[in-house]
Length: 289
View 1 (cartoon, helix red, strand yellow):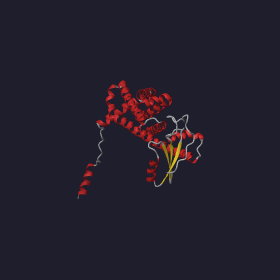
View 2 (cartoon, one colour):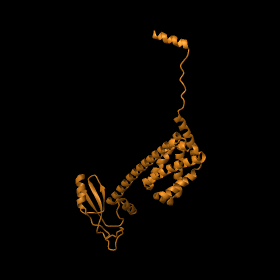
View 3 (cartoon, one colour):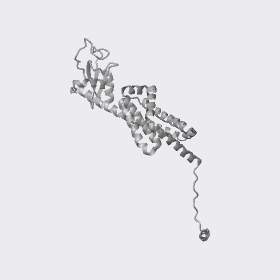
View 4 (spheres, one colour):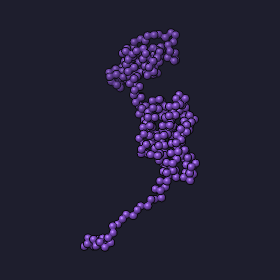
């Protein structure tokens, strides 16, 4: 019966309910206006990118000593790096989805390259935050110049701008730390190969300066070698017992034996590691512990 009633009602009216159109909310209209203002200012920044880069480089020279050194050594490369980073940042304001991957690749490459160059991570992160602050400042300046009444709308996109800066600071730090770890592993492997060459007599004269630097020992000096056997815990205790306090030594770990390359504290060398006038040339053999 209920079904019949519903059917007669539908026949009687002959109408199909139509969803009422949704009226855009005040918030969505304001967000759209804010994006319009943001894009207008970002396009102006993109057209004036060389000047924006000059301003960032000047800030780095003024506020960050590590970048001051980099600018002295290679100003062109540093300017180009800042220019690429700013271009990707501003382009991401105009097309967040389309520019995202390229911007991330740019930041990753910068983080890795600066780790290889030895620039401190704190200085690199400071540079990225300075770049973000400068972009935001220029967005406000451009909007104030062309449409002062629209400056208030930028507050609706401020979070997006600063989220981008935070994301890329995290990204560049990850790239830096990963590269730093890889470089450390390479240095460890190279030091192990150089130490092995010294111990088995296959090292070349030309390798000695690099070996000294890698092992943290003077290039010139009198050395002896200790060999420590036993299980790893006992081996460590024996190594400490056989050496005088404060001895400069590089340990080369082996499967059954650990070898210590020890600088003789009474070798007659000067403080800079150069041989003194009465320094002996040959080191005596040391008994194995």
